[in-house]
Length: 364
Image 1 (cartoon, rainbow, N blue to C red):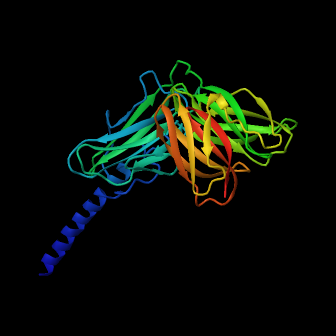
Image 2: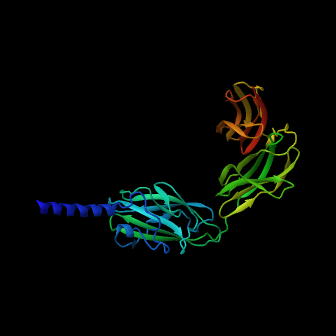
Image 3: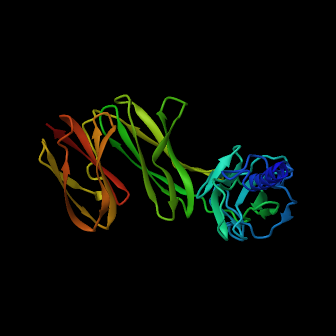
């Protein structure tokens, strides 16, 4: 009986060791095992075996012509094989181990050690796939290497490196055009601009300052990012301005690859009683004024548009979004509920067809 017990324990110990090696990192790999020159190690360091060279475990949607600086791309990890547990670790690095570009986890992946992407859980499907996002580095970086190490069960480890060149062609820069300033009160104004990203993705911001000052205030626009080939209207409500003072403002579209400024424009806040109600020939009517529970808004769209209506305080702050939806071309009538708003003077802002319009209202 003693011999049988000893043999049984040995057998179970061997099974346990093998099983433990197989799932040693089921919920992600530790940082530093991508197989890059700086790391010098792969999944084999934990799972055993020798890492062979793979050819199709790592793919991207970067065009053949190369990456565009500042553009985000999808990287896909694909591991084929039997039902054994599968996992990976990937990192874009130079030979010194410095991350090139930026990474963001996506479906089934997570970030470890700031510059590595790994699986959130081991998979057994055949094939098993994961994705994450890589944003290309600044212009002039040149070719980027993305390193990956992969495991498909115990002792079955592989590695791969893909080289992605920078596109030779100069990408079309965005077009930034400042449009209007709408006075909201004696101390607040709404800044507007249009950005055409020309098929790329950019962050959007404004800078403004007192015309006598040399220091610019930088703020994130609404929306904060723009993309595509159609001009996008951006805006920002500036508060705490000085009545009768002159100010300057400019819009900016920027990413890792490019920074483009719009023209600098000057504006002045006067009494705070004037509002641009007919900006770009967009007119709307509101009644009753004063309002109690409901506001009726009538306006005509010259083309279908996503229309946003905001209630703005006298000092320029957005109190509530009353409407946000697609509307058809032609005459439109909306009834907006304002019964939970505090009595006072407000501005109603309508954004449609990339134009902002404003009207003073009273809620009692």
